[in-house]
Length: 255
Image (cartoon, rainbow, N blue to C red; front, top):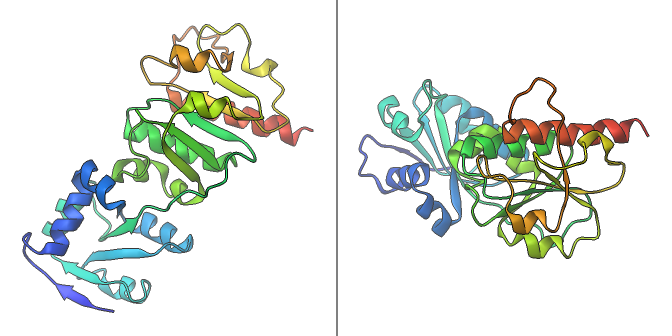
């Protein structure tokens, strides 16, 4: 294992990590991302993923030097690490990770379909909900925020490592090839979520935070609404997804 002690932002490895932290274009070109914090690094290691570069503070070096095998390590002053980690209290470690490629197989079980989700925090919460509910396949439209951005990874808390995530999908085309029901959350749908029979594999579609689902996607799905007796106009998309996927869990456990 190589360990470099650096103190300058001009170091090429530091600049690479900074680009992964701040530039979506760099992440896409390099097919890499930045794991920010001890929890995400631990989750990636537990999932058997290979890290690229690990950057730590001097105080956290003894803990991580024995955990990351032969991965190159940078030891940074705390001030430099704060440039890579935007959280209020950095945990002393960040790491680069090559984004895992999804398996070639298509849906053999439940699928979460996300159309034009813009907020990375919402994206992370949606992925975390899918993983918690046992949905393993998530397909994202071309207009979605990055599933593997540092902010989405923080929101997902490691969920990305347990999912098969496909980005840049033409959801309408993909839906027409599915052999399972496809349900879509829509405020004006005539049917309630609680009227659906969710005992068998299905796909669940959720749309943009403001605009909801596109007309094209609604045309190839079965709409449902979540009853809101409190009179609230709508739910946050991550909350709506959680209610839906765990209604699916409830129904299957009751069978």
